[in-house]
Image (tube, rainbow, N blue to C red; front, top):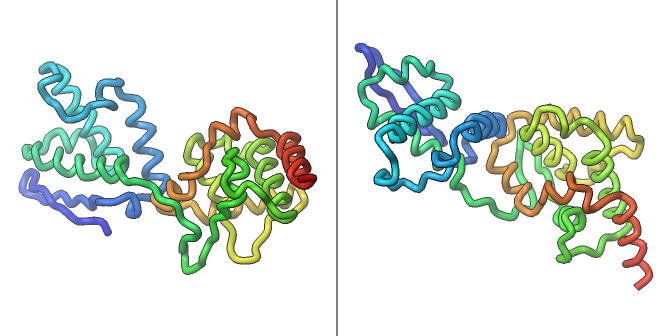
Length: 241
């Protein structure tokens, strides 16, 4: 749950709704924050809280970058934030926000609830696609699903459009099914299904997304270390043993 804070400015109260955990942040909000964060210098992104390592100019830059990030999330005008006299309170709120964004430990989940419906996270298929050996033996239906997942991940523009936000949203939409729900077998219908599910998941919280991604290594997919041919050969080889 978000906590509401208010700060006085020119006789008025400016209200901020600040999350304390990733569950209260949408994937879209997290992505926007990450995009801005990654534009800042390496020293800021890797700062560990030791002010003695910063020059006076770096301290000034640190305040500016922090306020920019705070503005991205709260949608409050950066000029207004800079005019607020209570800088200590603003930075404290940003620190709470930043901690929620980056310091939540993901965990393995088997399912999650969204809009009153339950979605199952198929661990077996995820492990197979990412090259993990644990639970790698798939039955026939899981093999079909694995091949469908690779088709979507490698052969469509769904993940290329919209940067990291679309990548994560597409992967969650591909992997997570309602009970007995399957992806259509025809290419066009399969793409349409995933596209519609991405729209449905557009406001999914970032914690759920990161939990789903926890055992899913995107780099192994995008670098094509696992292709459809190698997947099929590996499945057929397992079938002979």
